[in-house]
Structure formats: C-alpha cells, structure tokens
Image (cartoon, rainbow, N blue to C red; front, side):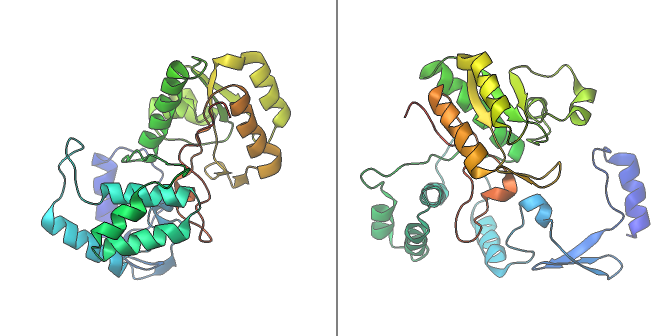
Length: 281
C-alpha cells in the first residue's frame, strides 16, 4: 500500500492524537531506519526510549521467537518463568551492583538453578527493590502515585499531595496529565484530579516554601532527573535532587523518580530508579 493511501486511511479511521511527521518507516536494522521511499535515517528517538537495543537485534529476536513458541500470556494471576529473575536483576542494578547482576544473569542463562538461587537471595543488609511490571509509563507513574498515597496512609503522615515539576511529562491518563504541569496539555481536559502542586525545576526556595506551607499534606515529590518533553532540562544533583530527597526525609514521604528513557542503563550504571523510598531515615 502506498504512503498516500496509508495516510488517507489513518485520516479517516485513526484518532488524531499525535502530530505525525510525513514519513512511513518500513524496516529497521540496529540504529538505521528505512522509509517506504528507500531513504535511510538514523534513529535517535528509539521509539521514545523503548527500543534502546536497536531494531532487529538478534538476541531480542531469538528471545521473542522462543517465548512466543512456548507461551504468550497467562495474566498476573499465575507464576511464570523469568519474572522473578528479571526482578532480582533489576534490584541489583538499582543498587549499582552491575557485576552481581551480570553473574546472576550468566547463571540464569546457563540454567544453573543452584547458583542462581544463591545469588538471587538477598544478602545481609542488602537493599531489596521490589518491581511493579507495567505496560506503559503512565501505568508505572500511576502505580508510583498510588504507592506514595498508600504509604502515607499506612506508615507516614497521611497526606495525599504530590509535588510535581513544571515542564514535566508523566503520561496521557487524567491522573498523569494532572501531574504534568503544562497548561497547554491540561486545559482541554479540566477539571483534572486534585492533589498535585507545581514547583519550578531546580528552584530550592520554591520547594522549601511548598513544604513549609503544606508540610504533612505532602506524600511525594515526583521528579524526572532529566526532563525531555518540554526540552532537555537536567535536574541539578547537588542543588536540587539532594534537597528534594532531604525534604522527603524531613516529612516522611516518597520520591518517585521517573523517566522512561532514563531507566535504561547508561555508562554501565542505572541512572534513575522507579521509586526511591525515603521514609524517616
């Protein structure tokens, strides 16, 4: 089917929720994409951060083919292979233990259950990170908001307000749009769910004033270590991230840090964590 015919069909039958660029990709290898006209492109977007291993990666293709031949989906009501192993690997990576994760992964790949079980068991004093597997960034973010409010009710201050950064982007559900703090994305969908307060990125004084005013009403500070949707705006580590984390310790609450592209390991280290628990220490 020609590109023009494809555009015509989408104009009639696909909701116009995205402003698409006038190109149709038909094939990809590694970082290279090929359009329907044969023109080649370098893919720096990577499916908005979800195809970081490249297109047509042999290891990914082999794993997908093997799994789909054996089992496709059985829901979360049953145990399946690999889920626990992946969660154990993520926990080690979240602890910056890349070597431990690599040894565990090798044992799992070799089918050495005894070694994998021994390496997967938490060591004395090791921080254990539990994983919630979601289908999208919006689902993961809503999960973190629910966890923050649940934690505040059960073990913290009972508050339900989440401090969010202006210029962020957290998803397309009503709840995540309410946390996104960009008027042009919110105006068409008001009234939005409540319980969110805006703060300028890297503005320690505004953050301090918000905590002074709301105090125990706050259950979380939601951060993107690097904002991407509104431009590339990094959060300063010393001046901002450390102060925000310190504030969540002063008022017992949580610091959900999210950025789907950031969850991929960079420079051999995991740069951000889906949920940073900061109760009272």
